[in-house]
Image 1 (tube, rainbow, N blue to C red):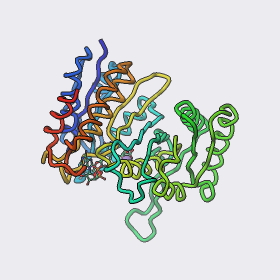
Image 2: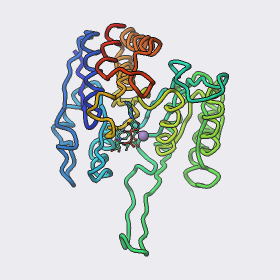
Image 3: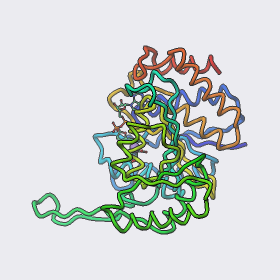
Image 4: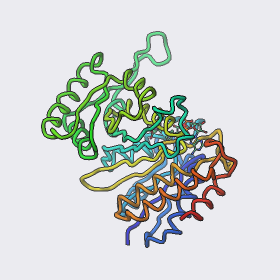
Length: 341
Ligand code: NAD
Ligand code: IPM
Ligand code: MN
């Protein structure tokens, strides 16, 4: 029997995870669920984090981890977030952040031009390097002479493996997005790894855009993208932009994967949304579509499709939370999805 570890986390995390667990229970896949409900902001100690070795051992013993959201703005955000989310990505070397973006219903697009609304792409985000490496420091803190440095780490190993992953999941095209015209060293490394991968994959179209132009193109012609390949920071930013074009952050799923070990951390793209937490306003679809990615990853293809179809039906019937223009609460939407299942 496969075990899934679950970290509900902070803010709306527990609300959307509750929805996911109800759906998983209804699907009756024979999965064992191990909930780490002490891993949250209340369990965080500055300097030592919110996740200990025993938690990591429980996660290691499982086939996949489902996480709601981590973050509480009154804390030292960097230390807390690094101690949970970024630590798990590093400990399990989850280098491929796979973020599919799909417009589930035309009315959800914010774009005025009906002919240019379709979006159906995957953001492949490098997930262990770049500006997230944690290498850096500062001198003469909080003075006019302060110097603050965060190092943008790009290794041949790290870049070549995420480039290869992008070509593995591409249906027709990989578009590398970077800022190589200004940020030279990392840019050159990415472009060379991409050039070699393009040679190995002649049937896939290989294209390139600078990040500023890519952001524009995403808004003016989102349908032109298949796989958008980006470093850690650019991938993070484009994820929220693309999610907004597909109806909003409340719909965006993601998988943090290590394709070699096959372990994965599955989490919605959104955060803990403190502004709406505890009010029943959280859209559970991002977490449910994330759960679909998780069960598909474990081999339950029909169950994954069933979740996606039930979400699509709920959207079509306008059984949705206020962020999608509806009036239903998180729990009412969950009941609609369960009924559709
Ligand atoms: P956020 O994604 O939490 O919220 C941005 C906006 O989107 C808010 O207005 C929020 O109400 C709305 N929103 C988000 N998810 C929604 C949902 N499911 N349904 C309806 N509306 C939704 O981003 P933020 O405000 O920048 O960050 C809040 C906290 O979350 C911070 O502590 C941040 O560090 C953390 N964060 C965590 C993760 C994660 O755990 N994976 C991701 C992003 C941000
Ligand atoms: C995400 C989040 C995280 C990230 C934050 C919370 C560190 O925004 O998963 O997209 O930037 O990776
Ligand atoms: Mn993000």
